Amino acid sequence: MPSSDAPDRAPSGGRLGFATRQLHAGDEQHGPHAPRATPIYLTAGFEFDDFDQAHGRFAGTVSGFSYTRVGNPTNAAAERRIADLESAKDALLVGSGQAAVATTVLALVSAGDHIVAASSLYEGTREFLRDDLSRLGITVDFVSDARDLDEWDAAFRPETRLVLAESIPNPKNDVLDIAAIAAIAHRHGVPLAIDNTLATPYLVRPIEHGADIIVHSASKFLAGHGSVLGGFVVDAGTFAWGDYPDKYPQLVVERGPDGRTHLERAGAAAFTEFARRVAMRYGPSPSPLNAFLILQGIETLSLRVKHQSAAALQVAEWLEKQPGVVSVDYSGLASSSYHELAEQYLPDGQGSVFAVTIHGGLEAARVFQNSLQLFTRMTHLGDVRSLVLHPATTTHVGSTDEQRAARGIEPGLLRLSIGLEDVEDLIGDLSQALEAAASARLLTEAGLA
Image (cartoon, rainbow, N blue to C red; front, side, top):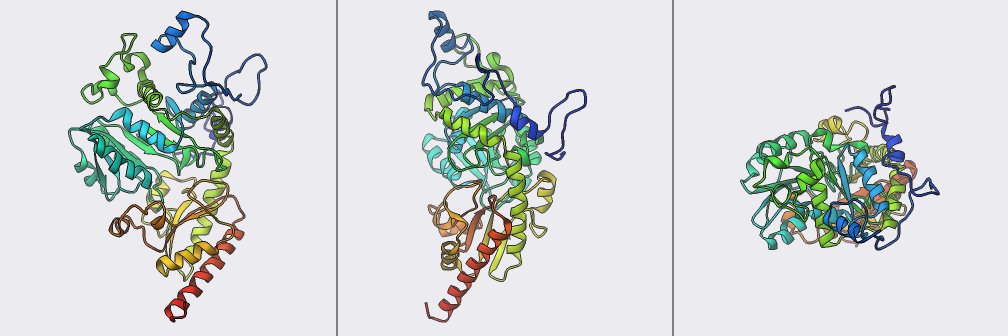
């Protein structure tokens, strides 16, 4: 895969480079005043020219906007931008990353169907798949070792309709072999959906490795400043839905008011069109103001992610050498069992979210986190500011000790998200926190605390 910084366009005017596209992709003229920035269309609905136009927009025979819950020009600009950056056919903006996951699943899976998912997932996604979908008669099998291709293959059933995994899983920075999993999914006639939140399209574009659907929490790196919520569903437009009418009748068989199926009406964008209808029904509507701020964030995406990934590697290398540290889970480290996959899929950086486990368990983690001064204690990722969280008592608090241990979430593990501060300052902050944790541990062992 070529470096994301390299201008991948031919002199004759081929495809532009990533940094250029994150500024210009999907641009359209907006009205007679031609504003350079995308306007914020802060309106609930849009006027119809006449009776027939109103009917046509509801029936799907006339293009245009009718209601912001269905579509909005500001939101559409963000959709075009992320679709271009992910090498995709189309995209849908929804109200959060979790809404993007839910919309994808609900668009493809029905009662009695089955999902194959990686075990190493954001815990909110795991809980949605495990707890909420089970009430709807949908079953899920989690693959415990994402590197075991035989385990993936054995998990499929005749009723499997979706495969779901993360390119860089949260919180341990293990890396997925996207191409291998895509090949298995396609052999079983099922699409692969990848949550690409932690990698972003700057570091890896899963569609170029065979994935069919991408989801993002745009609240993280895409927006970048921890100020808004949003999520994307991104459609490669390459999965052969028409080959599987029994599996996906909602796309291939069922007909709309105009007498056509979604595949007949939208072609390669059939999944996006149907997902938009699902989102319209369930209502995870994004604000046009949030869409504008996400667009603003995307304009500097490569600059931030490149810096944050380089800084994360420096911090991880330093932490790995500290006596108070048990382990560092970061695929950029030569010691990582995922390092070879990281070199294959993430040559421009391994992201900036990773886990560090310190000696002393829960109490040491408590002292360590409370001693940090630059790192913000909050449940978020991909911010310009560095963040810290203790998964065992927050994101994974609903799991048992055994379940946490099976996923490597130890009492002394903390998740770090590296921001844009000077690396020397971050290392200084981590150093004094490690010293505080070590002092507290020694006092405890001596029976003085």
